[in-house]
Amino acid sequence: MSLTRRSILKTAPFLAGLPLLGRAEAQSAATDRPDLIVAHLTDIHFGVDLLDKDRLKPGVSAQGLVATIRHAQAQGAQLILQGGDLLAEAFNKPADVVRPQIEGAVKVFAQEAKVPVRHAIGNHDIWGWDKKSSGTTGNEPLWGKKWIMQALKMDKPYYSFDQGKWHFVVLDDIQPGEDRDYVVKLDSDQMSWLKDDLAANAQKPTALLSHAPIFAVTPFLDGSNNLSGDWKVSGSLMHLDAPRLKSLFKKNPQVKLTLSGHTHLIDQVLLAGVVYANDGAVSAGSWYNNIQDTAPGYGLIKLWNDGRVKVEYVPSGFSLG
Image 1 (cartoon, helix red, strand yellow):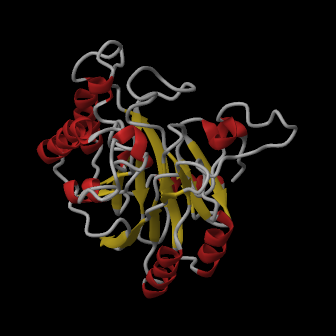
Image 2: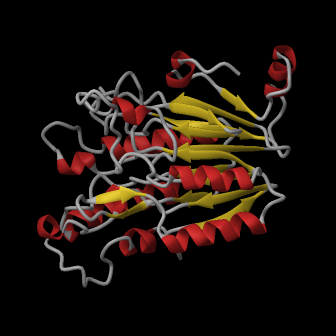
């Protein structure tokens, strides 16, 4: 498959696992009835309208999330993966500001989701890591990732599960940074766990979900990061451990797909047989406007039990006006 800048950045479907098929055969295979349809909803940023009442109409994030869940289920989604940054902002906010965000988002999913929902944690979901701005000490019972985990009924910040014949791994990739708020990577315990989990499920086609991309193109478009004469990608935008993960996936050819968000932009990379699909945001530019021509939407992923993957970004049709 020829990958051009247009094919990477536009919202066209992306089919992997068919390198030996001709065009006609590939097109025929792409129209096969999939064994599993998954909706990837990321960067919802529920409650931005609660934080910026002057610029956003009341209830816009709730209305947009409702519209997106309904749209995805109408497309036949059998599973929803919520990719993190469910909340507008918990990182640097006090508890009384965070609480209505959490309660509102959980309520919408409880009322609207008719299929299983699995969650990942994003940087904006973590309460109080900025202690000074949030007024926290770090000793609060729900400090850090504990609050969002409790609300979403997550026993651990990373985990795996099966849906049909597919194996899914949900990663926890937002880690404390020494010289910045956070970095994107797996800690040593999680990396060891991932190796063991993949080894134990070697016969199952596997998809991974992380908040931030493991490999991506769009981080290069984040600001003026080429002014020095070299490209520089922040460790808070893309996985610092991407080379290690690539090597791990090579040893585990059952890994077919990784899903991520974080940049709010559509980005699909095919590397060494793995599709790295980064989806635009449910909230687009966090409910204000589109971002770099990316409208509010979600990823619609069609999976076949033989390991084939098709990823498409679907605009939700929700109006930001």
